[in-house]
Image 1 (cartoon, rainbow, N blue to C red):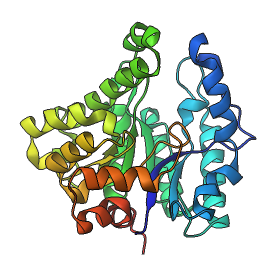
Image 2: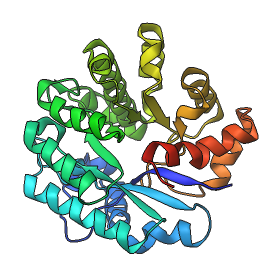
Image 3: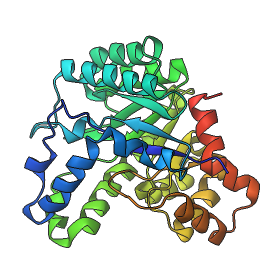
Image 4: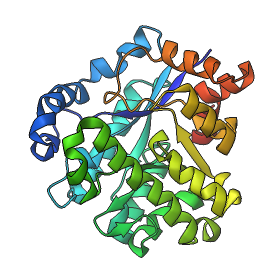
Length: 300
């Protein structure tokens, strides 16, 4: 069975990672290891070479390089997208790229989004689900969302660490941090529905992580029509969560995605085991493993 991992992070060594500075002291040793893995292109390709997966969809998350205010210089974002396009060109069919943009930077972000898709050939967009007090439905983000809807490419609306909730949950370790990030990811979905973004941009399709399952459940009660344009990855690969995602979104809207290298280890065995335990048919398993990703990113 073909397997494409939709959710992977990579930061080339020439870019400085600021995530270590922002990490709580208790989590710094873990992030020191992750920082080395994030910059290792050979490691990014190892699971493909060894046959555990067939391809990765890669992003270069600005949040891993952002300053204390969450900002990355526009020139750095442009350079990141150029590097990602070069990475995909070096490994055709094995690496596909999602362009990073600062969605809260208005028209400048929209222009970079269009350049990255039209000129660089990247397959979709990667944005933060919030920025300080701004949610994804903010006017500043609308130009970027409009570009994605017009060009027919998906947006991975990625979790951020919201404040003060993240500070409040820090003492509870990685699980506390994941809860805070999942809350922000869920809130972004609610903002897209209640902010009427989905209704105003009928071509918009977004991907969230399985941390946002609560937000998906809320949307099901608010607007089932909007669910048709929401996709979820499998970064928390548990049969119960997978079954819930399938029941809410349908098998055609769930994507294999690990959040690599944040989550590491055997991918194929973990995913196939969860899918079988969740009662997915062979056809549904093929959709989740690769078919939905190919369709969403228009990969032939």
